[in-house]
Image (cartoon, rainbow, N blue to C red):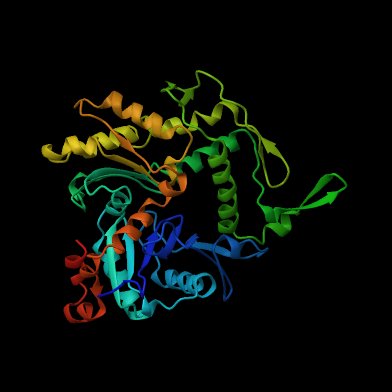
Length: 408
């Protein structure tokens, strides 16, 4: 038996933008960090806090693929080592570990992760579970439609009795980073320059601040990946602070490829790090309109609501009614003001089956963002869960394919 009162199991929710780690049975993760690493000669700098120091020549890498699988397992290990040493101060040999994984099954990724955790960290046991299944557990549903829109991928996944239905799963790359890129293009078109913190110095002069920009020759010492990382951090913050979802569909101008606002939203001023300010005005509610409409050059995408309808249409008839009445909304890209209300309206207007519709969300944004981790915390703390762990002894006896049988 693993876990229990004396030794807590750990829950690792691995995302492309953030990793979340904490103890099972708790309400929220102990540590949230970006899976990025800065490399400068033979030195390593971890997540945004370590990268914040002025480091010309530093190249920024992510250990994750865009689909949520691990790209570089050794880099993943370096990031995890730093986390365990600096933030959590624990020894993994004492703790069984539950990992989340992308809802779209990837046998190679889970075998690679299992081997690595047993061999390097000597963990006593492991379990790997689909994101959608864990999100369902976080809201108390074993059968539901999980709509999860994160940093790089958006999923619509029917879950039936605790199993993600692979044949019904709908996946698309229209997610948080796509919106960030749209906003970046909009800012560029308006000649709004985003200056990362290392490109200038600000000094207080009485009641005012004086901004002095670093010369271009010095800026050439900085790697492009370092510049992109910090620019995207600023643009992402602008996105989260300023963008809102429109209540009703906006008229689309096909020739200009723009949405025409019916009303001007409330003005909001955003202060850039260099002291300049921007005001997006009408762009606040037109950029997010892409999430509910067809997009040029993106084949097969007709809006988030159609992803839900398509996923449910592929499911067996006897569970369609239950899926429509249990649509669970989660992921950081669903946190925009008005998103849940617009999402429900769009599905209601496109629901040709006339099933009763119910959208479920966590009451707070933090819970919605961490729903996968919360589900893992709930699942691994159940009294009957100890039977599901894959122990190191089982792994050594049966080989790598045992993970496929134990973690269906």
